[in-house]
Image 1 (cartoon, rainbow, N blue to C red):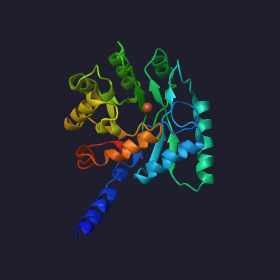
Image 2: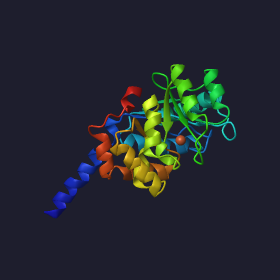
Image 3: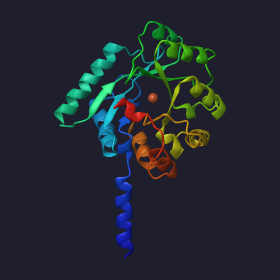
Image 4: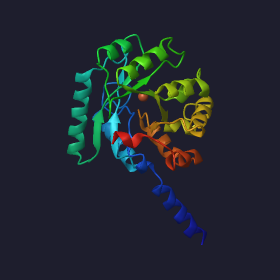
Length: 246
Ligand SMILES: [Fe+2]
């Protein structure tokens, strides 16, 4: 009798996945150009896992950072082509494209001025800021993006532990979207990040969720997250915008 219920419960868990989210807009699955997957084989392991968890479309976002990862149109399109070839060879059918995760360094504002930022969907631009302190010109540069017709998305706001909900509320009210790393809710990045992630969910401040997938440990955490009550909160009756990017 109990065995029967256990089986039913297990089935229920498998049914509940990220298929309603459709699009994963932040991951490091392009091979060999940042700190994510290093080879097409490593990329495929991560992509298969994302597909297994219900993701229908992947927008890969390699780091663009002047000090560490000097990616440009050429390096990103090359890596995407290599990966697509490997996916084809292995008969894996997934909608995959590329944009970037721009780091807010001294080159970022110039990239915007020169319209050299990578966009996804209807002019969305994914960017991250320092984990140590808030850039002094953050508000000004967000305003510039908006004035130029870009739709900024701040990556993993819950990971900037110098920020609180009120500061993030102000940024969001300007028109900047907030993208939560789903795995933050598992405690993967520590307690303060988990707490801020939960506060953002509770205050309906999460515009997009994504994996920020770099390696198999992230893939495992993404699966583990599905067991959390907070995931149910996010995936049912929550105004997520992921599907705008499909
Ligand atoms: Fe990232």
